[in-house]
Length: 640
Ligand SMILES: Nc1ncnc2c1ncn2[C@@H]1O[C@H](COP(=O)(O)OP(=O)(O)OP(=O)(O)O)[C@@H](O)[C@H]1O
Image 1 (cartoon, rainbow, N blue to C red):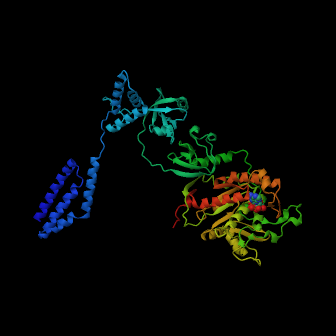
Image 2: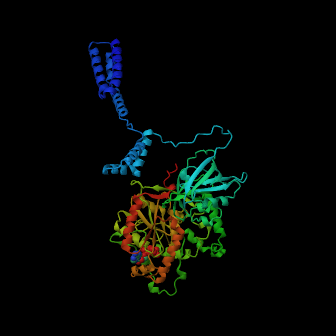
């Protein structure tokens, strides 16, 4: 044990010596060498069977000790290589050199060149920066604090901002009791915010030497708006606010908003207009009435004021009830409430009111109406004309109904004017997103769907509809239709299991959510076309739909491209398109976009069929593979 203590002592001393020695001699392997020597001696002690030598040997040869020594050596190395400036006054020296060079009466070209180089602003700036870094003197030089300051005086801050054409980025208000002018809010990303020197609650004492106390906010705003260049504020800073961490929220606007039309906004100039469907980044929600937001697709860094959810709801209701031109066609005598059936999706196709002029021979027989799109051995479910007929009929009825004027039917915007969204990237293991096509009747949604499924039937599929009509000879249950009893159909309809359903020639037809889910769960991409009023029903976490609106091209292009195309009229007639159909398609398209545009993930113009198909194909891939904004509720974990 005595030996081990002596050996340790020696080693410590050796370590200490090596430390200084290493610093002096620059030897890098000193410590390792000492350890090796000590280990050698301890090993000798072991062979002499001296007590404790074993323990000391295992301690000194432990890997952690080697590692520690290596770290120590590295740190030592690092300490040695710290850069020290050769001189901390290179800028002053360069000035001295230039002064000397100026005194040379007959300067050589070299002298001239050196003088020119040293005089360059970039070189001067570089030398100045070098000196600042060398002195490590980064703080501004502040004037000394006067010794005789009264203890209870509020500290005053002098703030200088350079303002050109841009607004100040702050709103003000008057404290009615004290008549003081206060900073009401600081707009994120604006001039005041970027300076970091003005905060909500700061008292404005003077602006450019002019006292603010007692002035009207309007006068102060005018003074600020007319100021250019440097504006000097004297402010009494607000006592520091608790730092409530702002979290950014992303939302999709479900309503339009124009600050210039809103008399309640505290500062219309600071307001931000937006349209339905636009994505907004809400950066400040501290005020319960007015939030600050930026548009996601905008390059501006400065936020604008937008109403909070409650303020916007209130505003939308006020606007709706004050609109003098609203024709409240939803208020009808009791005996004319048939359209209410449309909302439930029930359409009775008795053809009592059929086109008198339509020749009987043009009308499709039940067989023709039921002809499916079974081509080249591919059964493409959900293309039956029977379903399309009752839809056609629904559309003409719904056109007269009152979805747009009634607040309760305003597609949720009055209840939820901002929909919270997040970016969503589908995990390849997850079921594919539903692809829903929407468009005015005749624009080609059905054709596009058919083409896409034909391209790759093992990847794309439609949802198999349900019907109460009997199975025909060539059909197979679950392939063309799910054939069910009227009772079951009624039960399903009653329990909201259908996205849409209706009656055609005494039989019920409908597309169920489960039929869609069945396709999705099989790993295939389910492609459906739906009526716009069903959008809300499919916008669920379960289906995560990607909604594509198919828009018609110009009238001229419609005439050119639809020469051989057939339109299905609401009277069960298939005929060539007429100009009146194109015009109707155009006006319906505008109406649908105005009403439902904020739900569309993409708008596709169906001009050339082949081209549109390719675009749709790419779009579907993009919908499945790339990140997109979706409602936050779609990404929340399921409740237990
Ligand atoms: N880009 C296009 N060029 C030429 N013809 C087209 C194009 N798109 C669709 N068509 C044709 O237009 C007709 C109507 O198309 P489709 O049946 O798909 O309409 P739709 O939008 O489903 O409307 P509806 O629901 O009323 O049937 C069909 O004959 C279709 O082949």
